[in-house]
Image 1 (spheres, rainbow, N blue to C red):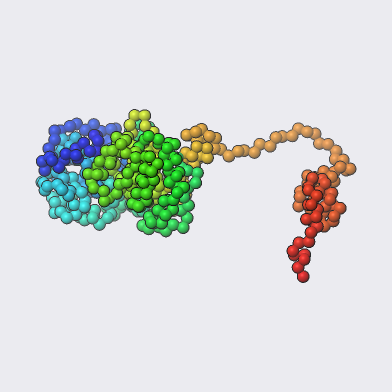
Image 2: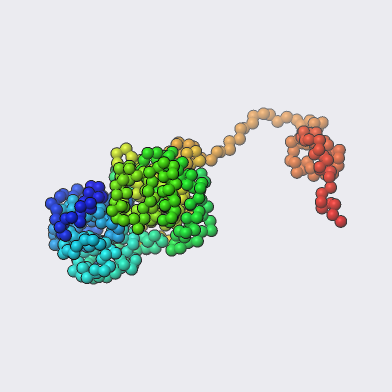
Length: 483
């Protein structure tokens, strides 16, 4: 698939129904396997299927091929629903590359009657009548589907079958999606994709001193953003972020995830003051400016893009060298979406994750194999899944015996007493008492000496105590002086 902006830069100048020449889509082995599984679920009568596969695995390519087959064999009408402009661009590129005739329902685009509709959910909410005759709905980033605007779109297409795709098929709070979907099809793991070269290998670093999160309130199952910002927007955290970027990502590009818009703006200013080309991005940034910033990130013109929950989904910039995590979270879904931005591969790349939030320590490394379920994640007390190597700062599994980054031996030292082969000797009664005073238990020796000055002097001489020690032992305590 080409760059996410190849088509979108000129899409508004094209006819209102886009027609492109057909192109063969070559699926990877796991994409072909998973597409077969998805189609089998629909054939056996399931009407609402959820597909889970990691960020960067090619979910868009898979559902575009499904659309191509639906159009070729059944001539049915299809609607694809997304929630961000970047996803409109990315999906439009994929549909065009596959030679699929489609139209766009989004602000600024003319009305059209194409057989395949690519829809922005915010715009579609005011044009729900367009879904009345749709036979098949596809929802990208479907972990948002329980929101009222999404449910309204599903209900507006009563006869349509539904496919939802997501890297994290649960709500950000950890609750499941079983209210919407009937069955879950799970794709490859991150570990499998890295082994085959479809995702980049990675290394995670955490600072020695992490921000104390005790006492923070929770809102909607995650840390309260305002309180979180006060803890993360402090001098030593920003200093650490700058130092670790220069150490591990020098001259590379990165995406920085912050707690609030104000925090993101402050972080961008801090990096710029240090001579690093950093920019802030938020939901109020005009779309053309957002596109230009992402392009600049891809070329290296901008080194760091700071944001708050804006580009954790749908961004496809393989040249990004890593991510900087300044936003602690309890949400596994949010955590995986953020670190997944760094894993898209290019030759020779190893993604660097600078985890100042401690998320990888609490929620796991990018290649942890999660057991996804439509029922959601059972709530349980937080438990660290990883630890920090004391030698190099890399975040590694709790069970690691050696650091995979620097090779340090992390096994606890074992006590191996040296066996003595000295023979037993007769104790000389003439010296036994003096040896006991010098080496015996202090508690027992002091109990023997009590307040007897002569005995205390014997103890002091045997143990080489300073002359004043006897004086202090004989000095009455406060308890003894009280009436």
